[in-house]
Image (cartoon, rainbow, N blue to C red):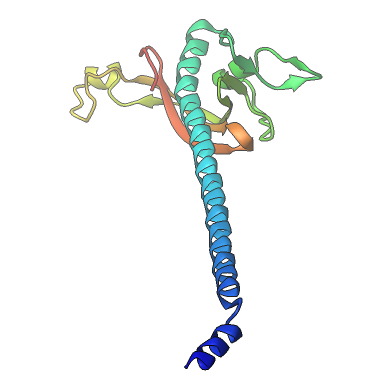
Length: 194
């Protein structure tokens, strides 16, 4: 018995070392794979965060534009706020009055490659483009009320409504960009915006 046990022991010398190296190699490959997956998931989460930031910039730009349009119509001039830049930029200088012209409907040719307004924010910027503008009588105005019409909105503010189609291009970190489009109606004589 002693001879056979010694022979088996002699034949298996180093097999545990090889087996443990194989197990260690498999565990290393699993660890590298898990690490790569974690890095990939982190990049996805970062991109989602940047896209959300760009979306919130664009969405905020829509709300700010409604207020700025009200200021333009009431004040008959471009808005004067820090961080708000009127476009286009000609030779490095801002051409004043273009947002006013666009909001008032004076600027007929519209270059889709140029925005009408840029709002600079802490975490990016928003480029605003007024795509179209039209005006129409809104139901519920004084003429309808005086005629005794029983339709919806009777007795409400009514009057002239200026319709705008607005595109907001929200810019965020890491070159993220989101476009939000909306339609906005400014009712003359009514305060506020969105």
